[in-house]
Length: 599
Image (cartoon, rainbow, N blue to C red; front, top):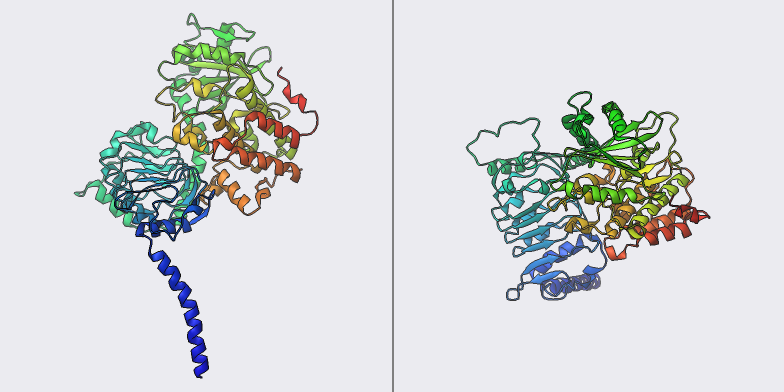
């Protein structure tokens, strides 16, 4: 019996000693270091940056992305943007009570924003934009009395904006745009200081800050308590989190897609439909107004076009979007055009409208929608394009299908991707002046009767922006297509277009919108979903089950292109010329020269 007792004691010692050594080694690190190691443990994937963090060091001050106070060795900066970090955000970060800057933007974080961050009382800047955070904005962020900059834009956050944020008396910058937030923007405290640009892209929001009247328009609850204490009471209630997050995200995804058209149609009804002839009478100065001219290569007199405009009403609407409403215009000789009416105009628009439209009208290419003419008046701008009977790619992929309607097969999808690539490459590299599109998405890819693609609305994003709206003009309508660096800086480049084109490829392959509800419920978008499938070597599962004729070899090559296009680093993305070369050499059938026709 003594032998077995001694043997058991030695076995116990052999197990305990290594554990004690590990605990001893980690116990030598500071409490900030322990919190950061917990943060690292929650990371599922990255570009390797966290491999440089060494637990055996006494403090984390030499770790990548970490800055410490030189005297106290307490962590004051945690800055790791653009490192492909994937996983949930550890609540242990709330123990970094000397932290001043938290910059984790443009990664792949998902899950909720930990309420424990409200314990970081010295935090001055929180930058979490460009991730996939879901759930609610924590009420506890209202405890960050030193906070000056808060950016949680371009995520999947739902629910209301907490009233507690109004307590942040030092807050000078707020951005919650491009989420799925709903309800009334609290009209209290510091929240009164921020304009529409801080809230754009949340279709469910209303309030004075964005000049949108709330439907209920209910009075504030009469109470002796401050609005902040009311919000704290609300925050203490327990909800079924998963159900609410899923429901708000799903509704938000649907609203994001559907309300763009609703808003365009609403503007039409509000400004353009005063009577049956209101479209022209208000839109281009009136049928009898002198000096109303249509410029371009239209083979009609202006008075004949205006006469046709007078017959248009909501039954002729074929599209609505961020730039205006589109109508089908049929002339007496049988020719059909698409009329785009731009309603919202920026100050100073007239100064360069005609010059820019002359340039855009001169750009002709097989894979670009042809701008035929335009009308310039003080009240509205009317653009006339060639009509494409195939509608938009968005409609072909996501529209309601009637009996007998055909699903896009594999060859059709490849040809559409190829045509869109050719059109965008021409804008980037071959036309003069070169054009950054800024709004590549499926609704801006139109199809002819043979399902051949045409890029539309090129040049309009730049034409309609001004200095104040530069960062936010496109955000509201294209959440899901935007490159991470564009969301941060607001500066569009060819590489931001390439990112959007990569998202477009994934949309065509999967048949799902970039912000499909099934992604949002998992804290992802279509790029995050692709990254997840790649890590499990299941990337072929991205293909739409309704797509017939899929070829594995061309799929792998196409996915390789898409992965490079949606890289978080702009330098790693190919040019559109290179994209076209790869598509031609590795994916398309012979005779690629046919795609270079520009007539």
